Amino acid sequence: MEIFATGLNYKTAPVEVREKLALSEENYADILDKISKIPSIYECTVLSTCNRVEIYGISDNPEESYLDILKILSSYSGLKVEDLKKYIFVYKDKDAIKHIFQVSSSLDSMVIGEPQIVCQFKDSFLKAKENKAVKHIMTRLFDKAMNVSKKIRTSTGISKRAVSISYAAIELAKKIFGDLSDKNVLLLGAGEMAELAARHLASAGVRHIFVSNRTFEKAVQLADEFGGSAIRFNKLFEFLPEADIIIVSTGAKEPILRKEHFKDVEKVRQGKPVFIIDISVPRNVSEDVNEIENVFLYNIDDLKMVVDKNLEERKIAAESAKILIDEEVAKFDRWLKQLHVSPVIAKVRNFADEIREKQLERLFRDMPYLNEKEKENIDLAVRSIINKILHRPTVYIKDKATKENSEIYIDIFEEMFSSKWDLRKKYSSVKKGNKSEK
Image 1 (spheres, rainbow, N blue to C red):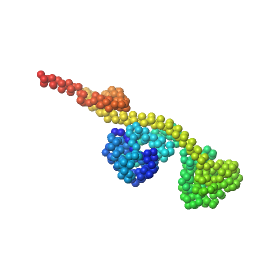
Image 2: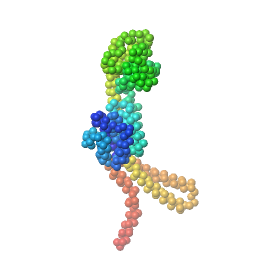
Image 3: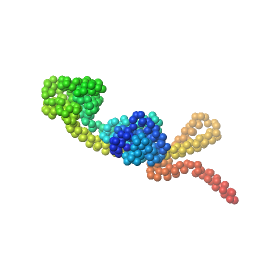
Image 4: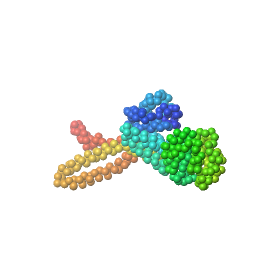
């Protein structure tokens, strides 16, 4: 049996192909069920995100499994098998394990270090578990993948640097103010960027969020989501003195905030700083605002420089993470190969236990005067002797299972304890043969 990983992602397929294969909540279980019922597949799970649809599993014939999976994906997407083949990748054994670890650690993500993939990866496994599509090996593999992901995030700091404009804005605010728990925020605009900023600000624990938008209903909707207050657009200048942080993200074609709007703010705030982030394109805050004392203005280009720098640092951290992944892949591959020899070791131990039981039964029959405690002590002593005798050959065969040509060593080990090598039977048959010749 081999571990495999197959599917497509943003590296192998354009969005117009990926969107045809994206799985919804309604059809996820059906696709998983169809794949898990492929005769050559023993365990499997399906990971579906906006950037990838990938299948991980255990198969005794990965090539056959791949062709069957192609047919299922073709039927679901409406794409021909031959067309799908152009975009589908296939990894086996160590390459598959490495890919799975890279995905769970966000090293294979479009944005290295992004945290969403960890939840998506975990969720895919839980769904597979609910549908009884995974067993021992895949459970061990996913547990290890999550462990590797956690280790990479804590040891390399790969996800600590902000790589979205909205998040970079909040990180910049923290550098200026430190603790944000006593800060009021004014959001101008209620679009996607403003919503992301509000989400980051709420998680940073700001005191209050005010939202102002030309469409008042949108301001109310966004403010309610984060327990804030909506302000009518024509009243926003009255609230400027209340704001420690102002984030501007509107579709206006000219500046909304100008220097003259802040002429009274400095007096009211008595020297307390105001941090303004203009993430609008075109810019919605005039540059001369930066001339006001204790007012700090940053635009999207300033934030992009922060993001670009942080992306470079994440790439450096990713190189360290790849070394760690190579080590963990080697460990898991070693465990997997040793797992293949476990049935043989179990067979040998069962053989030894049968001998122990027969010998003890004969011994106890010949020594009826032994009490239960004495019998128990003898049994424990014999078990200990067997374990010590079998320990070295067990360690030996586990080590050989990880080497090339391991099948040769495993076959020899198994045959050594096979009944066909019972010398008494062999010599007995030889003697009978000699007598008949006479």
